[in-house]
Length: 336
Image (cartoon, rainbow, N blue to C red; front, side, top):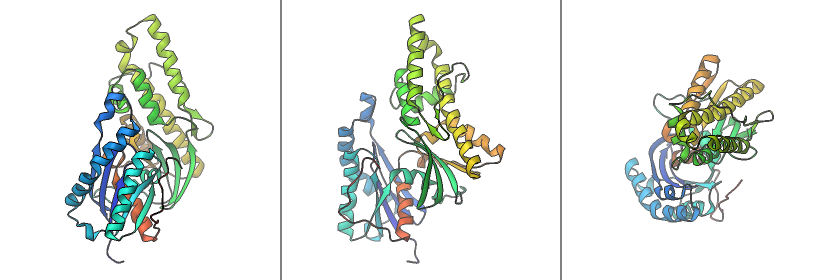
């Protein structure tokens, strides 16, 4: 096919229903419907997420086609998130993708959610430079923290990872300890920008050569708060900004230091960031500072940081070129 294919992409791994239309590597539409109902529970409730996906997916699909100015019969393939994620949420997207594939008689393309975060860097945008292979990608989200050596669009090598909690999960859990509203990570980031990150010291999340362990950090903060609250019941309120800044600095320093170590050990100076936590202000600041140290740093647009279908579509594009399709028997996988 000489003409660039139209790929419809579906993302429903957690609590965002998203559908995008891509022509080749360019995004024509990227519609996201977020679920506010989880705020009342301080975290994502899987059953409620599944029900909300069922309500949102058809309107989001119609809007994505409308924004892209593309008709359904122009589509060449359907790409969808097959995992990892919440099983019920994934089932909604997979079922919708299969139905469209049958109705339109076009192929299905299964996409790994984490691979999609990494390949979001290959989306073509005006005034935005894409990395060349090989490059290192620090993938940081609520469910995953990895350092990935990206040799090609279909060749990934995990060289560092968390052995327990992910960095985004640590942000959210510590935010909950501080009684911050859900989702806590962005709120903690905002407060941290007004605080002193060197005031309090917590346990180092680095583990081994290139791995991480964030569960100990959460415990460290918990014990610290319990001790200080015994002495002063208003301790959190009086020191909130500094606590947030110190937590954020601890997490981001560990991420950046391990990334630098990975770059030095692989001799790869092209480094990228992906996942929802890549929107964190301190992480972006420290990444930009790496530019002054001889690194080529790639940071995605904000719209491609959090869960979205455009990143699913770019993986779908590369798999389409290789005719790497799946059949209707495929089932979602909560874990890989």
